[in-house]
Length: 319
Ligand code: ADP
Ligand code: MG
Image (cartoon, rainbow, N blue to C red; front, side):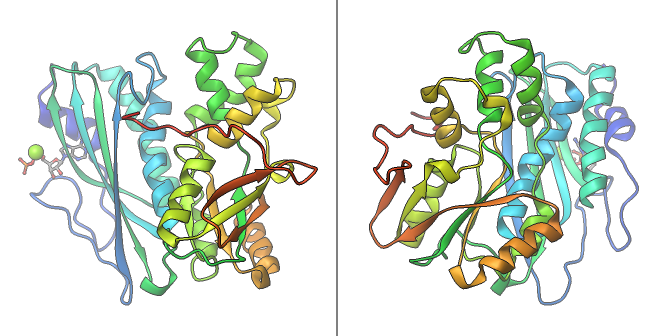
């Protein structure tokens, strides 16, 4: 096995951005623009839990960073830098090179350089930990506790594809190669909605990224904002890869499916046109899917205005 230091030098050392001190010292150093707060988030990814052992390492490198950048996007923050913790059962150079490429490609695209981390050999499953730092003006941060009664509820992109891809790969849905090829990218190469999050900062009220399912994640906004929600099922943006699936499978994927990394956010009805403009500027589709109410809980209305029964639950690691 290459030494820990060779491995870090080969795969994870990149030139630091101006004003930063990157990999190689005891700590990394970075500036935040005056008037901004640091937004920090961290996520763990465990083999067999968050990704399949045979996943393409380049896709894994991308996704490990993407899910963290998605948290910055949901806060309206701009990326500043990131840290990578690696617990490796083995050090396979080709695997690490592909992983690092997926990671660095997205880091470059998002302007979020890798400025440090920790690397160790592990007797257990491959485990990755990514921490991202961002900058946001305190009054512009999109917090989960900021939804107001009568706000419109919006969702970016499309829903359901990642859930269907996961369930095909996991053997819970029939192996259908055509369908899998239509939905797999959503699971393995999610796009963090950074430009949209920035465009919504100071405009939208509350926001969250959909990692555990629309109903569950919207539920976090509702709990912290002490409000409720009414969604219109037919207004939800369904990924084309779900065409032809039975209603129950579609409903479960759209309302409860995780790993989406789209933004769910609320904004004042008076700002409807501004939200549409912000999304156009960010180059992202957004759909207005419902509104915030003063009754607690979520109801989802069908085309006739009746609430759907038996809403699916989102993903809970300890359920
Ligand atoms: P320390 O003993 O001070 O924790 P290390 O020997 O663990 O330092 O790491 C040496 C340098 O390499 C540090 O700057 C650390 O941030 C960086 N580093 C270690 N592992 C990684 C990694 N997986 N990705 C990026 N940087 C890393
Ligand atoms: Mg260390």
